[in-house]
Image 1 (spheres, rainbow, N blue to C red):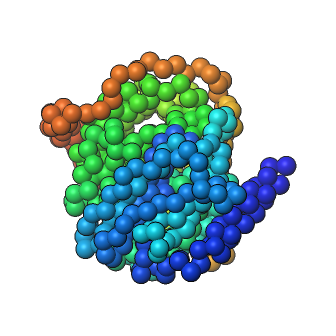
Image 2 (image 1 turned 90 degrees about the vertical axis):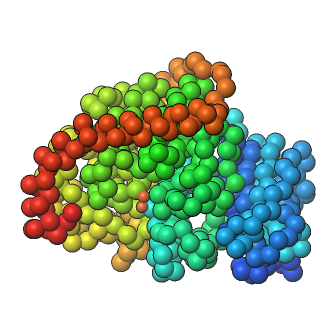
Image 3 (image 1 turned 120 degrees about the vertical axis):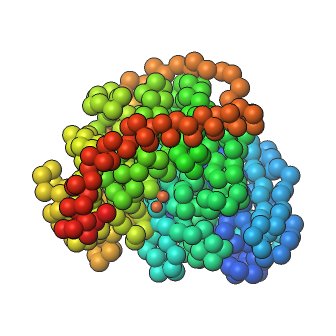
Length: 490
Ligand SMILES: [Fe+2]
Ligand SMILES: [Fe+2]
């Protein structure tokens, strides 16, 4: 029955899109001569507020049209005043659509009113369910590697064609240049115009160039503690509440952002609480030995423990690792599951066996899949360096929440086979209706509070580095030297 619904939904989407494409074929522009880098981001609950962003080579009007499934102009929807600003030699356009009807397949065009690009997305509603896809770390520079990342996402839609949105946990590109974002758009653009996106800022997404990430997307910045190197925001979808963090904030997650997260998670009575992040606290990859991400084991996890977060999904370390549920850095069946989601791209990191027991207990690992060939690309519980060629490929994750059940399924799209293989599955269950709202105050951060909080955040990272991280790092140096000498792995 579910498959029949999926097929009907897919056919309706294709018919609607093709009818609109047919109606506006004369006006449609080729990429490069009109709107490019088009995205429709989740900017409010259930995708009923959507932030459109696109770029043009020259300044133009910023026009969004919205139509329903019959092709009629969408009644009741509101459009914000458009923004058109020069950014890095191109022109950035932003328009936010709000008051969109629930459970509706919406077709849109963006452009100057004449030269337009079309897309579709579907809004959510009151259902106690939601499905979404998560990918991370495409982090490509070349057309070939962006194409591999796009193939991974296409495979994800093959596994979950009716996903409500896609969360991309960061590192969209490698160097965040205009050239790379255009290559990203060339590979992902057509697919990107068929869904709602929830982007997460990665450290490769313009870190060091103020507002780059914020200017690539149109997000709800109303509660973001700052927008210079990323955006934190949150939204509901179905019976779940999602918070998106910015791990470029004071090198990981600042104290003001943690305060925001705590208030945000206490402001919801949704059944499920999920956090998207870039730098993952639990990892055995290349970055799993540095204090920026590792401090999150002390700071982020504390807030997740206090607010009963169910699942944290992140990236950054280009391998797949799911922890067992944890509370206070200890196993706890009622704790939070941390998922390092694997890379959807082709830059893959080997396992650093020497990190186990130093920065993360081996017993925390529920699943570990290394996507890089020639190293331990599948951990079978005892042999870190066993190899399974089928695990060499891009990784994607699907999550389905239905009432009190959350099902995570993780897949690799084999480089050679171009077939998806499921590598992991997790089912969480809970009693619904138990979460209570305990915070109703203002959850914005003043510039002064952020400045004070930043100083405190850097000081806290410094203290952590010298009192916690350094002694543990020094203890692993012999194993690190052995690993470099024998496996050439730092
Ligand atoms: Fe990355
Ligand atoms: Fe990263």
